[in-house]
Length: 363
Image (cartoon, rainbow, N blue to C red):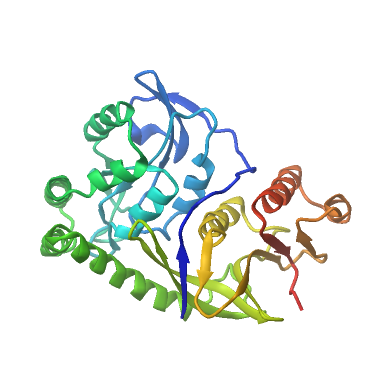
């Protein structure tokens, strides 16, 4: 396992999508990423469907709102708990999710679901969950008038009384959903145990979260996802410590040690397209934001950060940044949106001093 440290954070974002802009009325009718106008302020907003970071590309949505030039603040909405029913998943907030958002200077609003519908085909499973909008409005009112950093705001979100109130609201809401829909959810004692662990003290919350993250890390290190094309290096677990007390547990897709340089590769793969999807690439870029700010990796003097993009149907290869990108584009049938993506990635790799290997196997 690799051990790494991060002390400072900087990143120049170049790939920008135009975010739709809305006057805020109801969180549940907004897209997963957008700009909202609220009490005279413009906020860049993203929504997580679950507190679990590997569900539905939350990192990609945070990336899209990151450093938004029109926004007074960058915010993300995360449910503290999500119960999908006895035959579905049960996910809980993790400390390091908040710590990572603080590092990115993203303000977190923790919230809870209070509406759901029965799953159309699966017994004891619920779907179409919706946030309590009144609660989020109250939090937004506090946030637009808040003048300290995201770190301070997010730490306040983790205060015991605030967490206990949120967990109790989530528990009561799920009990009402269970009774009204006549579905079986997970045992509510699980929520009570979660509340005890996260409110006992900060160290207890950290340990609870990190054990879950370690378990997920161990599972991921043994699994090859269909979208990953592994083979030039080996999967390796990495634990990153930061000055905020965060400890992040990730799995590097490809780790290569060559000519006394350690290469950390976040790999994304596509079977049927010339490039992986934008969400896949942005998910990788958000992780690269973290890896690219590593101050050291224990036992290694020199290391490089790489985003590796592979495709079953792309025949050519290139390493970005490159002055030959136009020639590479001309030799392949990329769509106009893929060309925009490649140009943005080339600039992003220049400005942040990492490499992007496209169908390049390094050796």
